View 1: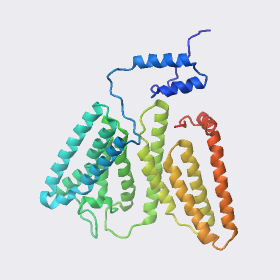
View 2: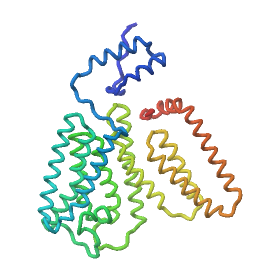
View 3: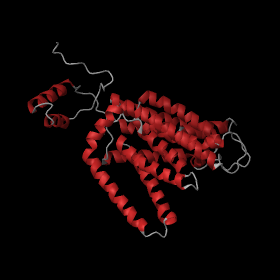
View 4: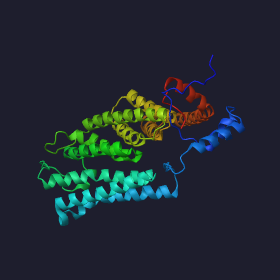
Length: 367
């Protein structure tokens, strides 16, 4: 028998972020004694590069709040209000100015990324990607390639890109997705997923008007089905990225896809109409399941949307189905207290539940 320890399996993370308090917890759990924990920490600290930039981890601090607040203002200003100078500069002028602005933002993002400032680098890189619709739209107008549609009420200004559903926007969205993918391949910063996720959400709506013909009433049932399909696809893509992150210790690229994908699918389901009480009950149970699902995988967007859905269903029961029932408030109170009790039980046994789920679904792990 060999005394050599087993090598770490290749399916386990080969890179983890470790803090000093993690070694204290290991000592408290009896995995190491105090002297061993301190010796191992000193050894790892001595191996760490002395001058390597430490990547920023997003947290709720004043500096990071300023990062996001300023970045989002810049994105809104350039992508929404730059077309106000359309009459003065014309399509080629706007296109040239947007290209120069995007190039400057990208150059600054590269510089900040090299210095380890991942958050402002991601914001500036995302701003460059957010300018792609403006560049594409201006170039199409300048070249006479922007299609005119009978009865159209959108397309005269890019600000309408964020207001109206129109199949003509698909050319802008495809260009944005291509540039967003290239930007992610180059810098691999999580915030770069934001413009990609927003673009996929917009595309799910604009595809309901495909092909771009005469503009009439929106087929909301078709738009709802497209939104559900796109939303589920985005959530599945986010789930795959989440599994990869948990297994190999990469950055979180799934958050924005979860956010817009879950909202697209949930809103499509919520806007469905049925006179069947069974269908309404299934909707309520589905949202209750979302609350638990969000808690299990550590994604609050599912819990929030599920809570809203349950509230909508309970509102329907209270104000329509059981409007004159005196027993309904009592039953609802008991249900609420039962849920509180379930929360207490879950918090008490969460660690063991997650461990059991991890044996079945390896991607699930406490956050």
